[in-house]
Length: 454
Image 1: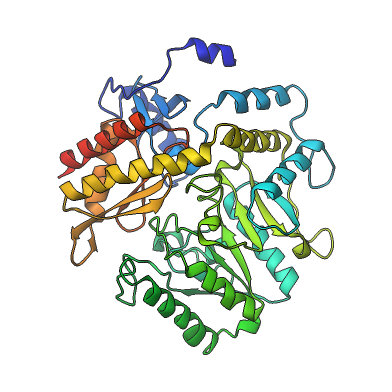
Image 2: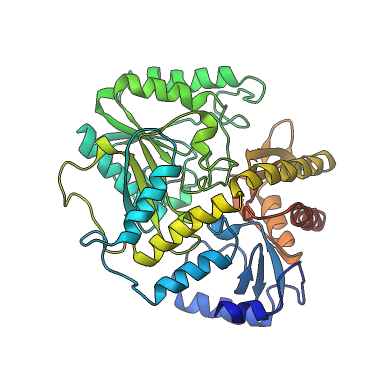
């Protein structure tokens, strides 16, 4: 199988044979509409195969992938070593219910995760199948440990769409439309968004003031009025908000928040589903902020595209008895092998270091675009987790969602795959193996998209 892939023509550059969606793609899109329940499809790209940072569609178009399967294929598509190790396991054992029985592969994956996640304390792992399941498990473990029932999350945060995690999600109203009620007991507070926040503070120029106002809101307007801290089990947050717009808070914020939470005996759950495994130029984004969360939620790139999630927790937070939580597929054998292979590949190929280095290159090129186009109001991010925010006016920072959507589509027609995020931003998240020439290729395609959309 692997040798057959290598015999095909390598995917090395953008190559648009027809204007997408082409005739073959349209057939699949029509069938998808007929047979699948409505979801969140954004671009009519119909993938046939992929390699590294490139994707080929059913009409022979080749795209540069700056979406990475929503930050899933961090080591690129069909990574040879990860593929080989999963293929080897395919001939041994696929599934053995790791929540009820035992096998070495799950233990190896758990051990690998405890070694790379932040925190010098002893840790344990619970495996899931997705990010939303990871947050569901984190909710339960926080309740069981603290014997408290309420939670706090940030406006703009995204933590999943199942009925428990949905209670924390606050990035788009459509996620909640017609689905009330979800799990009760979750309160939301403003996130220290340097670019747009309800306090009217420019957080880039006055980060300390933004931190102070945010923490003051939590203490004085939440804890002191209607959500006593003695009731709060945990605070669930993303180190960098993902679906909320790739919002990076001031660097000192989480240290101060953690200090406040510790004083009240409140756990900090860090949702690293999108920010983990090298995406931000550190193995985990929490490291940028100098914190060691008691609970970390993981998924997406944990197994390079094989469905898997996990929570990594301080060992003292373990469930007091068995049976409080379980599932069928968590820690699946194939996923466990892929998890270890992914971590090994990240280390071996110095992907975290490349994310930091290439992230700087990408950011520099995006700032150059900002100089040329007044419609770009903000460029933000960490490592290879960057976003470009489109506005109607730089002074008012009024978001221009329609322009953003046009640019996402016209960039796609020029061979670049991206995803929107937040009110008016496009996220740029290539695989961590991307090189400088590919970044330049991607920015050039993005600029073509901007010119075509204006």
